[in-house]
Length: 102
Image 1 (cartoon, rainbow, N blue to C red):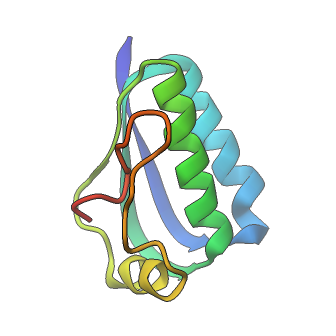
Image 2 (cartoon, helix red, strand yellow):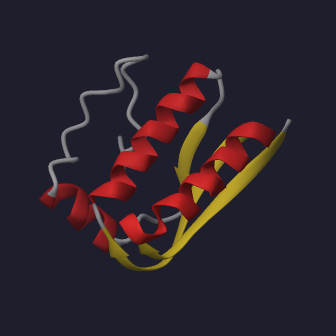
């Protein structure tokens, strides 16, 4: 399988959740490893953080690799902090966390 980079940009909100989920599913179906890359983020909300965590669990179940590449924007870091996604206790599947070290 070939690697894939999912570019995440603009608004990462509930209004874009279906579109983001479709990007994730396409990458999950065709790629390994998979990288998430942030570009010019304007807005982010809880739905995006939940989608990323669910996507991470899906990749683990399929024995695929998912990681974040590049710089995580401050807006993403602050939103994670504000919504309680700071302390990574790890995914129940293997104790890893997509947000660890970011």
